[in-house]
Amino acid sequence: MAVGTHTGPTPGMGIVPGPHRDDEQRQLAGVCADLVREFGEQLGTEQVQQRFAATVSRFDGAPIRSFVPVLARRCARQELRRALESA
Image (tube, rainbow, N blue to C red; front, side):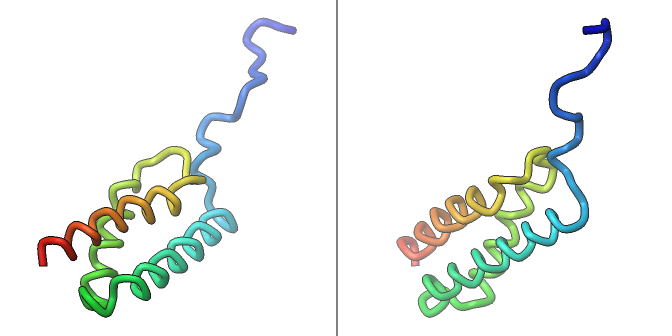
């Protein structure tokens, strides 16, 4: 192999515009809808949506986007459960 030949992942591949970003947005919308179904009656739809949006924004700079919907669901659910406990 020649010196300087790059064989690893292409830098910046975690941030891919287009269909992958659209897929992430669809997944996030689905997660938000699930959380509204789970917590909306107790906390209100608007509060659930706002808290989820705030949670998602914490991942705005994440270079690898694959797990953002899963992580956002987990973090938002924990926060919403805490909100229920303190209500």
